[in-house]
Length: 76
Length: 498
Figure 1 (cartoon, rainbow over the protein chains, first blue to last red):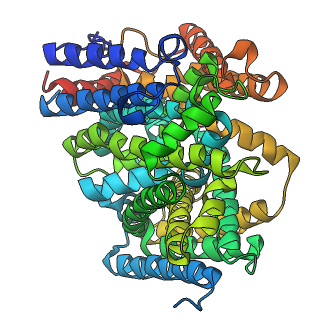
Figure 2 (cartoon, one colour):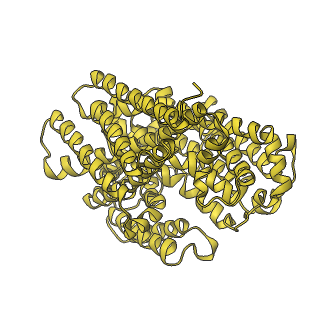
Figure 3 (cartoon, each protein chain N blue to C red):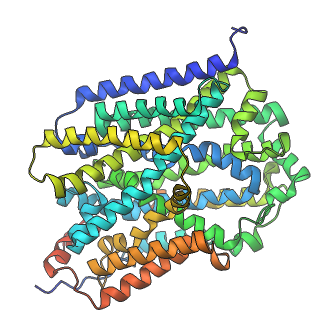
């Protein structure tokens, strides 16, 4: 029996799936080099005295969790 | 109350906590039916709350509680990269964990090797996966057990030796596992998951107010006195871009593919529960590193020059916190280590019972027989774990270095099963890839550590994938029936009926 040729699962097929993947990847890139080491690499206190890199990465992580929760709520 | 010595309170609270875990094991035993799926997989009925707390408690070990503070203390804010791998764990659970659950439910898989050997139609794959599963996690028994011995030794102010403390805590974990199987592990993980989270937050906040006037003041003080701790790559140049990326991949995929976490995916009551788990576990996993950052960074100012940086949390507690708080928090550290230890004991027991004993030694015995054998294997693992913990072997140091990235070598094989595509890996390709990946891992972590500033795990994964794809191109793929059966199930689960 020849296997049925399936569409790949590495690319999302629905609109919500594409939005979720693009948002997650874009935000994740903000928490990875070179952004972390070149753009975010500042020690001065920022919001409420939090160190800049600590605060901005915290915001990115929260946004990433937000994407996951949005994806769940959309039933993707 | 003021006459009570701090070590009495700290040790007493740890023993109260241990007693509670044994009681939970006894209660779980009364709910147990003589059935492998019930003993090994909680009957595939784990709901959201139990599954959530067992996953986070198993993911975070003694390292998260003590070691991460030491990392912040030594290398500064670079360890805040932890947020990337904790969020990635959620995404992996959401996308990959649900597919693993669907296949486990459809085809009755119990171990990671069940799934991979079935799809690739290869006993060599089963053996390779079982070996990787056991070898690279049994060493974690040693790491966690030594951590537990150290915690109880510190809590008792040296009155209970590390070796005795290790033995006591190993026996307690093995006892409730033997009594109640995975149900006991899950129930104790609920307690441990809550306790460790509350303990680390309370401890860090109390210390930051005691020493600096609050967490924000603490961070302002660090910025003023030690700005080198707040920039990358840190005071010792550790967190290079390559290390950041390597740790992100290794500590997300590498941990998720370890058997004690993969088996948890099989136990979910349904796929929707697992998706909610994936979406929300990073909240717990990531935010646990906020208080440990306060402990590590604040500790670098309050107690500079500590010989063993991992001791910063208990050292600060004994110096600045009340005995009751210290005891409560050290019991939390015990919970962090035990929740990982019991999960690894269970996973190794499951792999050895299912993939070795049932498959090759005694295939046609009763469920009751396999449950009894599983319990005996726990006893044997306890002895091995204890012996590994109280002695130091040079080759073990090497293996522990490799262990974090060992399970990562299963990644190409697992993706091949869970993500249908135009090309399929073969059993020979998977085994060749895992073998080459492990050799590359040894070279890039031990012989020439992290070539070109890139984490050795990434090099090994690249070698593994390249070999697996190329060998697969010239060897026999799984049968069309099997590909259709497994990938068809994935298609139905993800996109509905065809």
